[in-house]
Image (tube, rainbow, N blue to C red; front, side):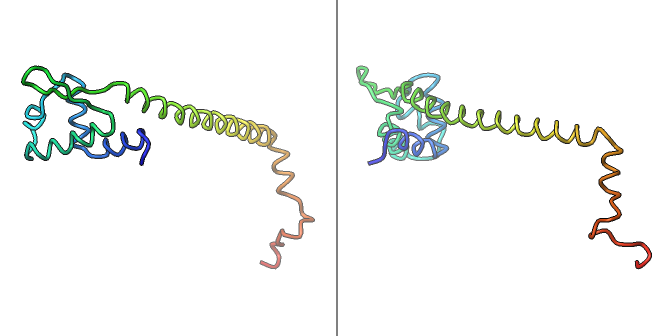
Length: 136
């Protein structure tokens, strides 16, 4: 059996279910109300709601004759904590990368600041890799 976070992400993988969640974030709705904008049967919408319900994203209550579907916001807290943990790790990696790049730029700046040192390095006539122009 999958953990709740996996069920939530799997449920949100479908664009119709994501749209239903977005609509439920505004207000509770019945199955018929949720089915209105889609060109699918009420039974198909009920199946989508069952997936959302199994993941813990929504719940159904009884209000006299109505059975409104309610968005459970505590599941979003679980998702947010998971995302924030990895976001923090990514930010720390980027900060380390920034530090390395700044050090590399500083090294290049100090190496390139003395043009005579750079030309002296490149004009070593005793280098075995340097070709003579006479034989070229």
